[in-house]
Length: 425
Image (cartoon, rainbow, N blue to C red; front, side):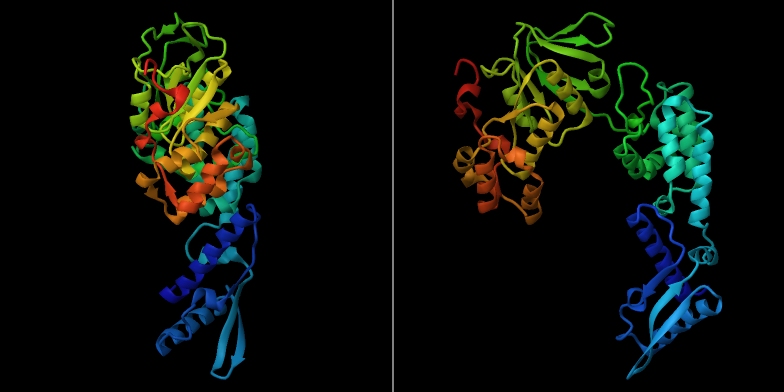
């Protein structure tokens, strides 16, 4: 197959996978393409290029792979459309595996493993055994990758290898230090899709206090989310595995996700009935407001969320919410800052009151505000109506859009914000 033929075949194969993805994985055996979609510069091309292109198309027709449709014009014959009655033959001609046949083998593999793996895995495997389609083949998942995923699940179903790093485990299973990370990248879109369908996706589910079911493999991404918290509080373990951790001096403490998942309840040392937590977007502001010697009078706990929440910050917010805390949030006065507040609210499943996030504060710091790009301003479209109704935010959004500017949290003097000023000042 020459370069011209290969270009046409690749165009059909690419369009096939795009069509399969748009159709939700539905298998379509025939495909029609406009000539202009394959060779858009035909009219301006040199005569030799036009001739080579037409010869390549006619050769594929002679091989029985395509049906060509021509149109008549003043300049002579012109190729209008190219029809492929059997896309599988194009894959075979290019030396690739037929995606329909490959998907069938992968569905069979997942179906077979339903019998071998624990029941907790069955909803996940059953879904894949019925719905895995050629669209996933187009994303790079082949039979070998599916087999490697099954091997990973079998390994964790038998015994979680907690004493191995991700790359050490990858060598142990696949004799390749990078294979496991690549495998997770390959399957992540599919697993997200599975999770949206309400099935338990082992690589994405949250970890429980005991052995996960199915096991949480998110740490295999070599990502180690952490957060920081301060306040005179008591951390009680969810499994009663030991005495509580008492932060009597209100120090700033750092927690990795692995430790947060062991916490059951958070209480204030003075046993306040409705304590308050202030989530803070930026690190510099957190270190100022979360200083144990300068606590705000009406805030009991300060939590660093670091922009859009990672797993550690989200897990801590869920614990604080379940422990009865009221929520306040301080962040940038820009679209992303408001979306982060919205994110905190969604995770806490409670009202969240903005601190120093209103039009008055925005106007006070407008001389030092930064210009926002069109893409940054477009983020306002993601702010929901229920978020806009929070007191102060609708006017703030209006000012941001009108001025095209945003105020970074680090330039705000929070001593100006009344009841949130540091104690004794």
